[in-house]
Length: 474
Image (cartoon, rainbow, N blue to C red):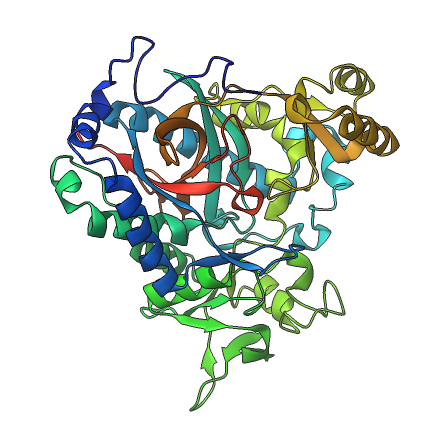
């Protein structure tokens, strides 16, 4: 989709008049010299480089550690817009947790015929080992990143629900800190809802789901696959910000059904593990026997109720792209309410009629792998060559159940600093939700921006950047 197709401009209306939330930003920018944003961008890059905020790109020929491009112009969301968004997000995460409890227990939603049994029971993200087990407070997904896109003034869609190990929150926090450092005067002109309390709220959330709530001092740790993981910077950042230990599998062991952390003194019992490794690698005795990243015996200690794992094993079924099409039904089934935030219309290629439609319209739609992420393994029809479409048609026909398809949305655009000055670029938004003793939603989240003109791909692994997201307070 090129820039000529109509899209919602978040900063100004069709007549070029700034929207209310952006008025002060526009007048502030107009009074700055032409090289101002260039200078500030370099300043921000220096800060990020000093902090070592990088991500790894797998399969790249050049150096794999890269800085995520940062755009210094904030994205601004009004208080009223945020109220509706946060209500929709809360409704959604509560329903997804109810769904996870149900499918690992009575499976009422399957019995009611609202979702096909084989879509869940034959799904590789469904963990039979979790059947019959209830985690603390009945919470399965404690940290959720809900990806939203905007297509008009009052229309937001949920693109996907990240219920496994959503990443990117460290960029949200560092973006804000950098912005406060380089634009203190701009902050004084706006009442921006704070995000910097996220690590404290994350720790409170994790402590609130400890297995023994009578314990006043819960021991929490962050379990990382190690320094070669693409999100290692974030694992270390969050452990440090929360004031808890960052551990690898070899730092933990199980003794008499309890999990302990090796320390320079005596071993210390662990109550809550915020894991950033996939289900398959958690415990070589239960899952992948070749895993060197996990902890032998961890899953039995978890099932015995002696440790809490966040997010729970088996939560991936709730953000599986094949399940995504049923989330509106899931919300209605468990809450009795219509969804506040809509799904993007979705064709499930495992259905013959849907597949026929998708194959006939590959030039106009987006096709995604059911288990894919990071912008890999997908086809964006309008920007693909005839050869790419032809090759993808063969892949899709060979394994249709591995794909879903969606229309190409005219994503909203925000003002972005580019080589020629300031221009609109397409964005999405990932707010972060914490669920424990209560639901805590950080105001704003991570805005990802497609830096190439006309591009809809915002993933950092595909050349996208990030922005600070401002939610204005009343």
